[in-house]
Image 1 (cartoon, one colour):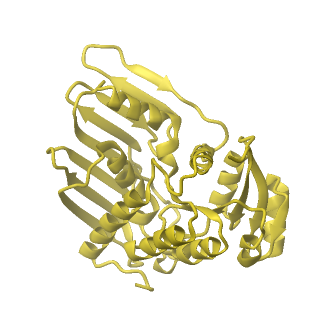
Image 2 (tube, rainbow, N blue to C red):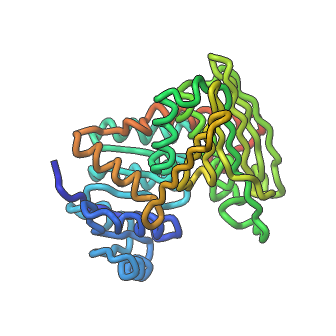
Length: 328
């Protein structure tokens, strides 16, 4: 068992910076190396976030023999290439969500990790936040009875539309579904712990050919329903609600939440404020290091099978809309 794990980050964008801020709160995580396509970008990031080494190529990063785990922070069309590169060099990988643009790519990544004997996890950070851990505990304790309905809205208004922006550009994997819709879908799997027996969707395909907004209705074997939506066209409530036979749980700002609220009829609401340090992205890093300390090659909370189920459902929805990315 290692006392300290050496981390590398591949790419220097916004999410990489947020992950680095979270990593800085962990005494057992050594901020070892950052890799970029340009050395000056890597050095600037290293100086800003306190990384010891900077590399001017992804190849140089993965060849560093001291790195244990690499966080992949590139846009998702590049996840396959970048993850396979890290795996080839024997690195454990935490890859930003979505793991890939489709199930076929995700399966390649899972197969490569298994063949090489390294850890691989999709970085769906919400599942590891203290508020969601509390909500899951309430469910297991039977506080709200049997779950009958789950709703989650991730609708934001992007005021300055730019067709070249990664959110709208198909060349960059532009898709509300893959960018933010994956959050409510993944959390529906987390809450329901079952595969839906029916799944319906609809989408607004915008001027760039990507989905600007979409909605999903899922029915489960026990009759429970999930009602989910996302989009870049309107400001929504940004809340998740888990409704059971005895009560409900509200999760405000559910993808980055710091609060869980238990509501039982005729009783005072039980409001749990569960703040986290920095950006909160460190909680998934804690889990990765715990799994590695236990000798695990995949997560017990975000296993490969869950990632593949989510990707298959997203593929199904995109097929219904006739939405394909350039390389598909």
